[in-house]
Length: 227
Image (cartoon, rainbow, N blue to C red; front, side, top):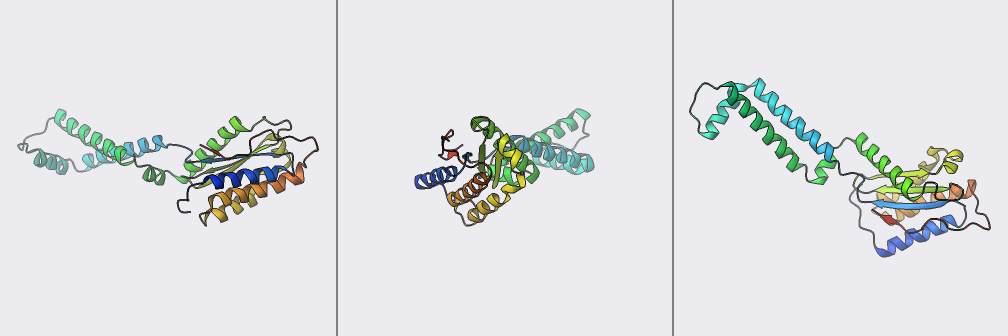
């Protein structure tokens, strides 16, 4: 999935209208959140930097004469017998330079994200979605019928998190159709349409299990939340 076009104000209004339409047939309350990214992955950059520094140290251990000779040529030092202090100093310098250089390179977020294993990205997106759900939807409705549609752009990942009343009746795999409908639109660079497709599918499921009562009122905002 390529980088998606940004949302316009008209897109935001369309998503909000889709949420209102989906909720008009059920007691469910749908919250939509669009995140630029779910994590900064700074710890991943540190791990990669440490790994590169360690590899540099191992290279010094494997080929000490080559690297000490290279250091002497680069610094213009006279050929002499290396003392343990000098060897450790060179090793520390090389490791520090490798660590710092790798960390600086990984300040570029696209590369840092690309070097983050998919399993870690998935866990971070899921964790952020759950956090957002706890803050914005969990137990904030009378019947515990809140549900979150969460899309994280940088990771190209989406999550659907449901409150306990919904989770008790609707298996998690049921939301697969909503995710598939969203993905189909996102692949065509239709960001708003992807969210609308997911919301529509979620609304249909909620209408089956939680039909709207006559005295039902809107308890959560319909507008798209961007973080």
